[in-house]
Image (cartoon, rainbow, N blue to C red):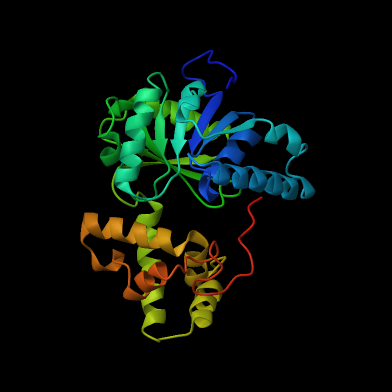
Length: 296
């Protein structure tokens, strides 16, 4: 597989994305919209085909709203592969796989070997300490966090997470890249939850506990926060949108690091996750959904 080569090690012309799920596909779309070439890797072909179809649908919706001119041009900037070695063509890589430190660690170990000259290896983790991931590599100075928010093509924020060994020039290159793809960056130290989830998760867990205790209905909890605090959506709707499995993993990670009870996932959340009720992406969470959310 051949893609545009490197002219300048600090210039990210080709970005690799590991993970073809909702977040990975959104990162790929945002980069492609910004004239970047993108390589999306998944070990299985089926998720890659779903990601390809999702990208086209998302771009067609965006075109209908006047946000992009030619979806075909953007689609052509994204290539899909089930061979990790194909990522050698990338100037930098962003990982967006399951929130499991061992899975991420082993993946970064492989990426470190396959891409010895990459400008940076970034994780999209929402809660796992970057130092824990970087420790699997021989070059921890080029590992950092780039935490995007869902849906990526719509949400403008990226948390840039500096681990204990992240080099200054790597941090600078990642911030420049994020700006080039239209994102606003905030810098954060490397601790579980970073900025946003440190503040957001206790709020969402409190709403789940309130509902679990029968204190108020799901609708009244959500309407109370929408109408009383001006939030665009209520906490239970937001938890469904984020993904209850993701919420559970983030809460576990935060509780493991800080041992604060307000971070701990309530029993109801665990029961829902083990039952496959993940929220919008599975069609059932605190509410039922006819189809997956659109991201355009």
